[in-house]
Length: 196
Image 1 (cartoon, rainbow, N blue to C red):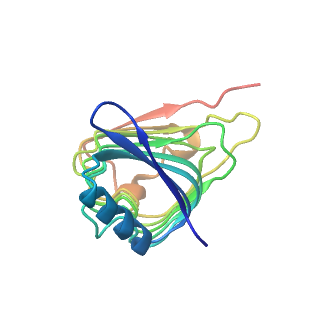
Image 2: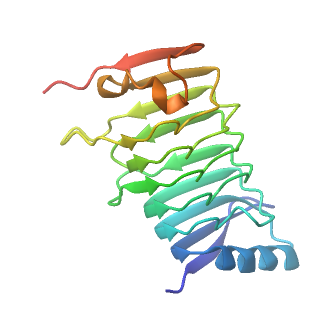
C-alpha cells in the first residue's frame, strides 16, 4: 500500500507533514531525507488515516513537537519512541478508534495528555512509559451516545511520577496503569459520567 504525504505551510519557517496510509519506517526515512535535502523545517505531523507501523518514526532525525492523530487504526510498537514529542492531539469527530501498541510513545517530553475515550480503543503495556515530565493525564468520555471503554494494560504509563490523573469513575481504581501498586504522589480526580 502506498502512502499519501504533503507539506502544508504552517508559518514562515515551519511546515506540517500530513500523512495517510500504512506508514512504515522506510517511508518516514525517505521523507526525512527529503526534508534534510530541501531544508524543510517540520515540527508538526498530522496523521490523517491508516496505520503507523512498528518503529516508523523512531530511527529518523525528525524532531516532532506536535502530533495530530485522526482516523488512525493502529500505532505500532515503538512507532514514536524517543521522538521529542511534546503534544499529542487525538482528533474529534473521526470514525476510527486507535489501538496504541507497546512503547508507541515512550520516552517523550509530553507534559499534558488528554485521551478522548471515543478515539482510543486500547493502550498496551508501556505505551506511554518513561514520560517523566508528564504532569497531567485526563481521560474524557466525550461521546455520550455510548460508553466507550478503553482497554488499558498494566504499566501503560509507567514512569509518570508527579501526575494529576483525571478519569471517569470507571478508571479511578487503576493505579496499575502507572506501574505501581498504589498511587503515591498522584492526585486522582474522578469525573462523574453525564447523566441522561
